[in-house]
Amino acid sequence: MSSSSDFASLDVSRFQTGKRPEGTEDFIMQQTMLRIKDPVKSLEFYCDVLGFRLVMYLEFPHWGFNVYFVCPSNVSDIPEGQAAQWEYCMNTPGTIELTWNYGSESEEGPVYNTGNADSTGTQDGAKIKGGFGHIGITVPDVYEACERFKKLGCTFHKTPNSGGMKGLAFIKDPDGYLVEILPRGPFVTKSIDCDGIPAEGGDEYKDNSK
Amino acid sequence: MSSSSDFASLDVSRFQTGKRPEGTEDFIMQQTMLRIKDPVKSLEFYCDVLGFRLVMYLEFPHWGFNVYFVCPSNVSDIPEGQAAQWEYCMNTPGTIELTWNYGSESEEGPVYNTGNADSTGTQDGAKIKGGFGHIGITVPDVYEACERFKKLGCTFHKTPNSGGMKGLAFIKDPDGYLVEILPRGPFVTKSIDCDGIPAEGGDEYKDNSK
Image (tube, rainbow over all chains, first blue to last red; front, side, top):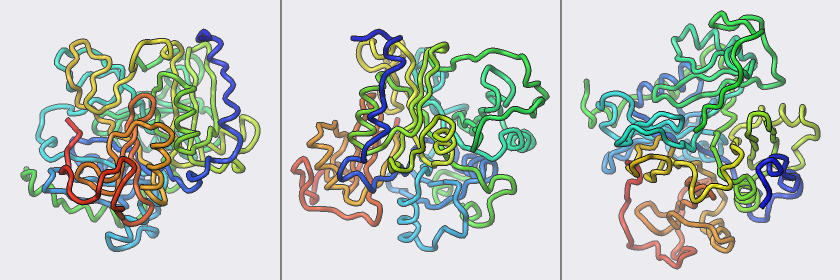
């Protein structure tokens, strides 16, 4: 077995070249499912703050849950009628399926573990090696997007100039899931960010994983 | 406050209509980040089994981690050179960012909590109310896709005809993260699935959340 340092510069070129395997050519990465405490708060965040739209939802009252598919779609593209909306949704890459189990909205405090060093749901309050890290959106201008998030009262985990990686940010959704804000093109920095933090100097990079 | 049963048929129509908020029109849902134990095993699964390609990777040896962006892209679309690959990646919706922290590949057993009722990383072995549920891919034919997954030795959490929801399946990635297999169009069922289970009869729906 090679050591970690050999492993770090692993030759992975074969995964970048060649055709997709036969039978997989039309597969789409369609969804990421996250459980949420309160659908109204989550829909307000994903739609009003991140600019996503609700492209499809399904209610399962007999099983005690609803699901809401959101994505950064243009509303004019969303067809009418459940069958057409389902087909539209299943053909749209990168949607988020928000799953609400009835009753969670009435519980005190955070309900779900977000995958990042918190411990909701454990008996002993210990840290968890969370697998899920974050979702990430790309935007034309990270600093402008963050000025807007700031005005809307978002909770920041990292503003663009804080920490060791300049020019990207993390905000939190209502359940505490991290949302990374990245540029659509090359990284750029601006001298001052939405929290008044200068690009020069500041903290070094800090690993949030466990 | 309304009760859960009122809440279940919540009016969410305003999130389906209207323009995206000003300043969000060009936002893309670009990534879902998952921490992985072993990059080779994960790349083999996402690329060889699910048919994704590696569109971008970055090595951070000074910080002890690498990231691998995979998505169901056509390889002819992936440009050459890191700058062009970055821009291509940041403009592609629905990629998965696989994050490998050096050394995890040498640990015994599962390393990360998958969000679904397992307890990796807690001190007391208690269940966690995991927030992350699964990723999901859509395919032209769920039964055909599952026959192929079966031949490739995948671990099934649910074959198309088992459980209460017929015509969809769940397989596991090398870290145990669930991958839902869904149809690109309307739900169809076939009489027998890859495990020889008939569509008629069988178990009822079971909630896997906690």
